[in-house]
Length: 179
Image 1: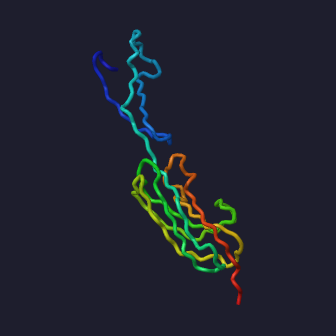
Image 2: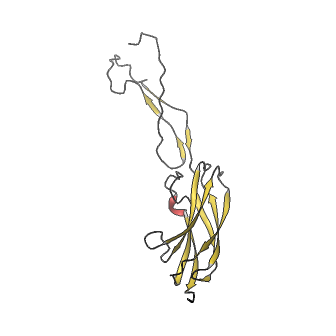
Image 3: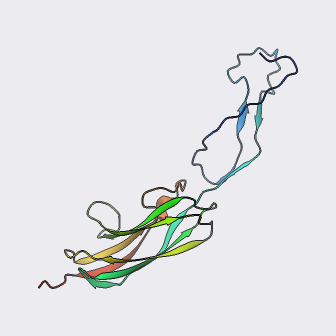
C-alpha cells in the first residue's frame, strides 16, 4: 500500500537485445496491468529513460597473406590483419583459427592448421596483425585456400556483424615426392 503523496523507487537488471547501433530509450510503466483504480489519472504512469547509445564491436579479417604455391608437408608462414570496424571496443578473449579449404567456406572437409588466442581490449577503429607457421597436410594437392577466421569460437558479441570474420588467400599445393 502506498499512501497519498508518497513515492517509491525500484530498480531491476535488464539484458539489452542485440539491436543495431543507435540511440534507444527504455519505457518504464507503473501499474502496467491497470490493477489500481486512479479515477482517470493514469496518464502519468509511464516515463522514458535518458537516451541509451548502443554500439558493438565488429571484428573483420581485412587481409590474409600466404605463399601462392607450396608442396604438401611444407611449413609455411601465414599472416593476417584483423580490424575492429565496430563502434565499441572488443573486450574479453577470442581465438583466430587458420584453415586449409578447397571451397573457401569453413565446414566439412576443411583442415584446421592452427590457432592463436587473443584478448582485448581492442578499441574501435584499431586492429592487429597475426602470424602463424603451419604445416600443410601431406595428403593434399591442387588449388586450395588458406582461411583465417577471427573470433572462430563466437566469444565476441558482434550484433549480426559476423559476416566479415573470415579472410582468404589462394594457395596451389603440389604433392611432395615420397621416399
